[in-house]
Length: 272
Image (cartoon, rainbow, N blue to C red; front, side, top):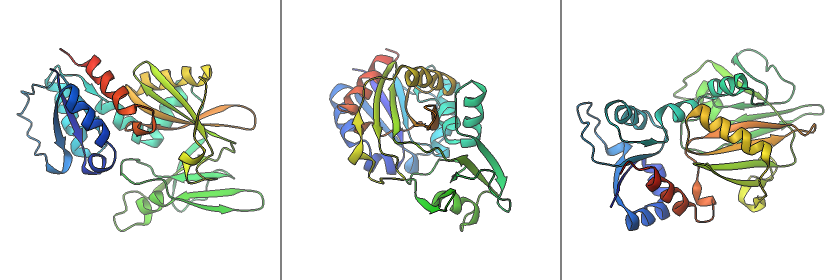
């Protein structure tokens, strides 16, 4: 029986993977490495796992994944590189645009400067923490401003990290399109944008594959070295799809049989 290592934080462990863990314990030996409880020693490289699955974005999680990637031949999904690229908004927006993938216009600006776009969303610079998008919406006669509370905390909070904001131009879209990728398999959904309906699952429906979005999804997964992901798209009034977010730790519970789909993929990728 194959042995799978799950590298995870307490938040994901308690709230996101109970069904996944229950399934994996039936089909493999499961070892769980919890970020808040694990003591990382860089001389520990004799892992007997056949594959590691990373479900988290914390610094210790990334350090452990890097160690395993550097010192062993055990596959790691998702890679430390992919996770790091996915949560750095300015960096991943730049990489996607340079690869020819359409993303909303974006900018990093000092906090004192005026926003560079008439309609915009202020997003957190580093999407690494485990709390949800918390938008504060300010509509005007001829414009709309959306500020994520997480972004405000990054700049003005008690533990401020930055002196600048990441701005993304606001795209008016009837629907948000979400694509889940598990290896070569893609799963397509659409829902009302969260700014219109915070209960995203209320309006979410499965849709037929959209070839254009599938092509973009595969390209983005290759660029970021992500095997398991979700990607968010908006469609402008000009019928242009824009990739707005890349998630390296998707909630696959939203997929029918998602824990089994992900678990079976991991077993297929294991080295033995």
